[in-house]
Amino acid sequence: MKNLGVTVLLLAGMALTGCLESGGGKEVPSNLNNGDFVTEPGGDDNASQGNGGTTTPTNPDDDGTKTPPQPSAPDGFDINKGEVLTASTNLSLDFYPPFQSAYLKVSENETCANGDWVRYANSMSFVSAKTNQAVPLSVQFRDYDGRMSSCYTRKIFIDQAGPEIVFAKYPSAPVEEGLDVEIVFSVTDAGAGVDTVTCEFAGVSKACLAGQNKVTFPKMAGGDYTFKVSAKDKLGFASEKSVSFKVSSLYKQMVQNVKVNAYQKVDILFVIDNSGSMEYEQKSMANRVRNFLDVVKGLDWQIAVTTTDPVHSTLGDGRLVPLYGKTNSYILNSSMADADARYTLGMTLQRPETGSGDEQGIYAAYRAIERSLGAIGSNKNFIRQDSQLAVVVISDEDESANGPKNDPANFVKYVQDSFAGQKAMSFHSIIARPGDKACLSGEGYSAGFRYEQISKLTGGVIGDVCATDYAAQVQGIAEGVRKTLKSFTLTCAPVIDSMRSLLVLKDGQVYNGTRSIQGLNVVFDEMLPAGNYEVYYSCLK
Image 1 (cartoon, rainbow, N blue to C red):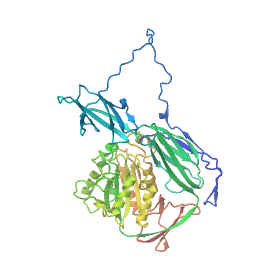
Image 2 (image 1 turned 135 degrees about the vertical axis):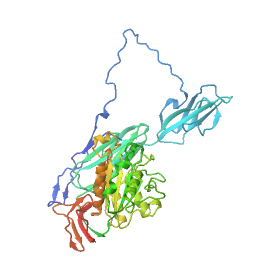
Image 3 (image 1 turned 90 degrees about the horizontal axis):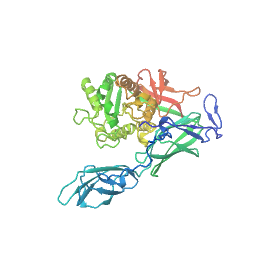
């Protein structure tokens, strides 16, 4: 969804000070965070749609009098005198049969099926069982001789819910004092439309806009904060959501013990967007990922596939999908013949069904791991205790919900807690990248803010879902999977500065292998020798 961008700046005012524990106690400037902020419209889409004050020329011979057009009767029937939107499930129907009728039938569908024939009346009330959606009604007439009319169909949107508020980007871990905080959220209403949006922070409320908003709070002082968004639609229904975050300048000292084995096992989960908006990308998915297995050759790998659909009873909610052309088989492994494995993976990723438009790739990966650890159904035996983990999401839209299992930091913590800090992991994303205007104005449905966040958090690759060929980025992802075997995934983001460093011991001795920090991952240039490692580092509390 391409929504408007709005930048909200937090201005100076409240006398809050803090001390950053770096470089000899650098002091944060005072007068931060008084809660005052401004809202600016982003783009031309907010321009008035009026006629600009122009008038329609008149005929000089016209005396100004006009005969108003005579209304014609609706074809068959109408709902609520022609309304297309209502807040009530109690609907008023008026009938206009094509002949003198004795009976009529009202059905809550578009086919005139399942309704009951009743005595004809000029009007009647109908109570719908559906809300918050476009409700179809169909009517058919019958005379005393049994002649039946065509099936007449109308729709009305019954809206009884407030606008939908979705936070796409927000701090999922403590923020160091003195840094900026950015929040991206959207406010939409499929029925009546959004009427008002209010943002509240630090006791100050101001108007925000419908659509997508970006809020920036600069140079935050230490403390606990909540940003709240309230919205009403044009029927008066309201909704409210908020995100909370912590700003801190305090650090905690961490030590992590990791046992490294000589074997090279990795479990790879593909999460594929099978929604309707991915139709273009799906047409050539098998060809787009054709070279993935070439790069992971030589590893002891397992590969499985799930979808971004959070609800489907067989293909969603983290369930592994059946392998193409294989009976009761859900997991590829490195013992298969290369050509067979490559063909099977490509065809399994190229989904034929149309899944839910409520895409949730992070949630699906979380649930896939839960199901594997619980030995549930097809997921049994997928995640091995002594392997590393890589997740690859391919989607043209961002995570569509805000539950605990949709959160990047919660996902990483769940993996770390489930395997006692022994499993290195990476999360790779082929998405509509934030800021990629060409993709977002083409096949990219909405920017993948949270997929970008979790990939950066785990040192993963961020690819372009709109690319005509995924070969180069799939190769990069496969190389990233190999890097996972040379990595430690830490429990929190390490702080490296003049006072804090990261120390690695192997079997009690300092290990000086060349390494880099990529999000939560410490990635070494060479494969780690087998042994017992200790990693000492500092994190923000």
